[in-house]
Amino acid sequence: MTAVPNHPRTEPVVQALGMPRWFRHLQPRDAKTAARIIGPLCIVAATVTIVFSVFDLVRGATDAPTAIATILVSAVVVAVGLATRRLRGSHVITWGSLPILGVLAIVGFDLASGDASVSAQVFLFFPALYAASTLPRIGVIIVTLTAIAGEAVIVFAAVPAATGAAAVGYVSAGLATASVLLARSAEEQEVLIARLRRQAAIDPLTGLATRRVLDQAAQSALSGAASSAGTGMILLDVDKFKDVNDRYGHPAGDEVLVQLAALLIRGCRKTDIVSRLGGDEIALLLPGCSPDSLLKRASSILLDVRNHAFIMSDLERIRVSVTAGVAHAPTHACDLPSLYATADAALYEAKRAGRDQVGVPARLAS
Image (cartoon, rainbow, N blue to C red; front, top):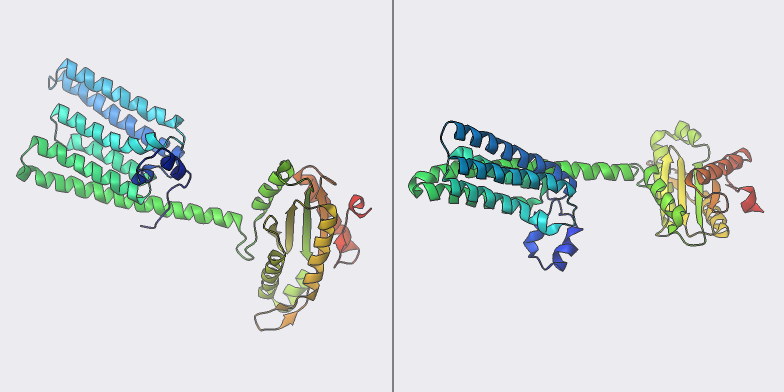
């Protein structure tokens, strides 16, 4: 199975409560997913139990007090399943206890009824299935082993060891196999989701942030998270990029973008965001940047690109230039669409004026 780390937010809570270290492995990777799984499991188990309790009562296989007690317990199980929908990830004691308590409840119920049949033992699969679907690997092992131990207690309490060993072996093999296969599937899905999230955040060619990440960072900066200096934005286009592709080929154009991205990142502060918006258009978000610093930064970028020799795969060196448009918040805009629009308009004016220069909005140039 592929290793998937446990959710890091539960670790400080577990430590603060003084719970044993292994307890963190019983925390679900996602509380909402766990609630969606444990609810139906409780409802199915309770519904089946109630139906067959009524059936046994009708055919005289059980007495009324036992049937009523079974129905009441089943109703409590349904209530627990429904209540989990309100639980959040911070309820570490509840989440960590639920699968173990589930096994203990099944064992206690079977021992009280004296039922060691397969129909009674089958519910031990439910805690194991829950664990395999939602818990990290060690949690799956803990719950599955607990279910297997519960199975042994149920069987050996009703039949001699020699007779019950085979039944315990078969059910244990089923529990272990189901847990391993389902846990592997859940872990592979977790890895796939993480990969997709990374792909949604990072441009695969240049390694720059995507438009989605830039938008989120810009919203945060414009909401007041940045310093009083304001937030700057620089939009860049590679001059005559189509000519580069036509003359040297598209792989050469890609190489220019890759090296340009590396050049921009080297000149960045840790708080800056460099994003590829599409094609040869690149945006830089500069939180905590004054209008003067914004102009200096844009001019510096143009000079760095102008002096840089872009090396192609055949070791040929070519020169390119970029055109920039800048905008500043709150000087030009107080929201993201206006900031984009102002920088884009400045970029367009710089292109129309001859390229390889910084387009500056009127209020910034004065």
